[in-house]
Each structure stands twice: as structure tokens, then as C-alpha cells.
Image (cartoon, rainbow, N blue to C red):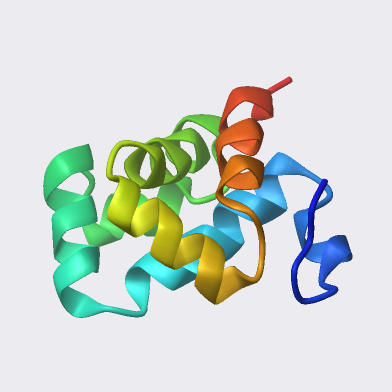
Length: 93
């Protein structure tokens, strides 16, 4: 695992990584709306299902499906993009 800014504990498991990535997604209103539109989630459903594997996978799928978002999220979170992609593959295991 390559951590850029020394925040290794945040990124040890897929669920925590997905929740951190979700916070990044929601920090920008245009990106948040695009996430909701593409996933079909509503703010209410997101609040109810944020702990569910399917929702957390949707977060990481959203990032991995659009390279500019993946790269921006990785930079902002201080991790390599490959870490976010690998967590998507590991979530729910």
C-alpha cells in the first residue's frame, strides 16, 4: 500500500476508504449531484445505506469509472489511485 501523506490507518480497510472517498465526493456539490444521478441514490437513501457494502462499492465504482475524479480524489486523500481501485476490488470480502 502506498500512502503519500502518512494517513495509513484511514486506508487499511475498504469500508473506511469508501467512507473517506464519499466525504470527498460530497465536498463538491456538482460532483455530489453527478454521483447521486449516476448511482440512482437519493440523499435519504444514501444516509440510510451508507454502511452497506453495495453503497460503499458504488462510491469506489464512481471514482474508478472516471479517471479525472479518481486522480483528484487520490491526490486530495493523499493516496495512490491504485489504492482506491484495489479497495473497490476488496470491499465486501
